[in-house]
Image 1 (tube, rainbow, N blue to C red):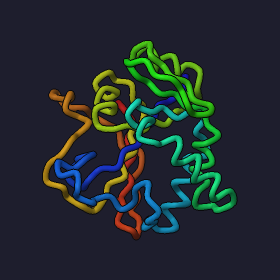
Image 2: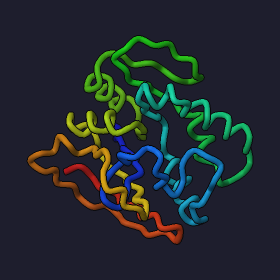
Image 3: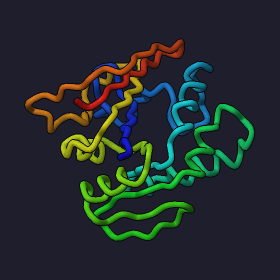
Image 4: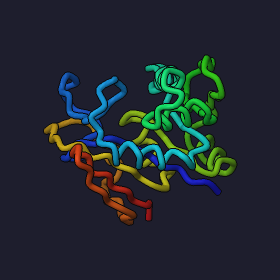
Length: 195
């Protein structure tokens, strides 16, 4: 049985998106501004070395995740900072959606059989799945107990209000700490295993 790792950037006050969309609170996003330090870049790439499948929300796919990182991998074929982009381009990708859509991306399958069914089937066949999506998609994974590991890239900014992925955890959700690492750029990476 494989594992599903949910990777999210969060604010220091625990939000995965800010209530004010114009607020620039992430140290690094998809853009060309690369303010992560060298050690975080190396660790991020190392973490991607074992990934064989990328799970995406429909919205993330439609917003250009696969296109962006495929183009980035092609533009930087030998740059060690972009090894993760090359992994994303080569990895098998699954987009889970409840609405019909066609895959226009290489090595990408559209899964419409329901979130629990599709993710359970995926983790039976894939060894290491990493998941990217917005607050709604991540919340659904959390609510259905589908996440094996949480990786939170905590940015050194409080946003005051926004979206959380733990709204369904009204009775609490106990997590087992795996590791914490502080980086010079201000990011703190916290890893937890689902109990």
